[in-house]
Image (cartoon, rainbow, N blue to C red; front, side, top):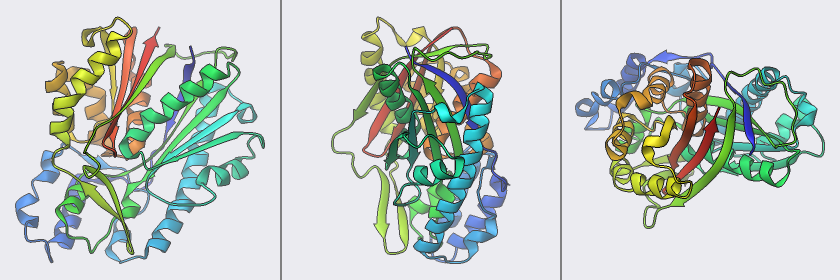
Length: 354
């Protein structure tokens, strides 16, 4: 079975308190959004304390064109992706020239060639590297990237697969979009960049990690008639957020049977999962997980911690949760990585942790 051997995350330079973001939103939205004052408690109710940002808060006071913000996205994603890749490789004691496959995941900027090509040139990676840029998976992209790396490493035991998730959600903010979706998104989303290395069975490495993470299986699911639940509307001004209040209900009603069916194929039950490596979404989604799966709140303590300290960084968030598990420790046994995203869809990866 392929192994996850290293994960690294980025501490971006403009971390701000949720209270600062609340004041900013109040100043912006109170001009035209009539429900702004009534909805202000969502900032406290989110249970987010700080947010990870790639630019200072005053960046958003000025209206900027889609082209300008997308240009900033490309510059910053190349910079921070390169840094986190180097750190991830250093942790693994890995020469980057040995990377055979590069999966780049993002939904918050557009570029052709895709950013992975720029990163390959900057870091002078193997010129024969296989590239897999993934766009549009949103919050589901982190787990999906791991699942696709697993497929690649199973088909090639010599594979060294690099996954990078780079989500600069703040750069999509439209300061003249006074919709409720944009207001809620402003209370929740932030920026994050993370890297993971997955290797095939033939890879020889000196594993200094206390735990060995083997990828046992993965599963994707897309739900019928839910295309309008989450995503972007592409407008002349940029990417306008689509964000439905129905997401927690979809989680609560659908997730448990999907997970049970997936685990049953391996003669496992939910109680057999010792480590829930879960993308947080938001506090309502976390609570929907707890209620639906009938698990103790402590099972999602790392997920809640990352939401509190960073906010929702779209696809990168679950890798920050994984990184926290590496730092605080796993329980020996099975782990389940899960995330949800546009489509509306879910992604699951089953881990065997020794």
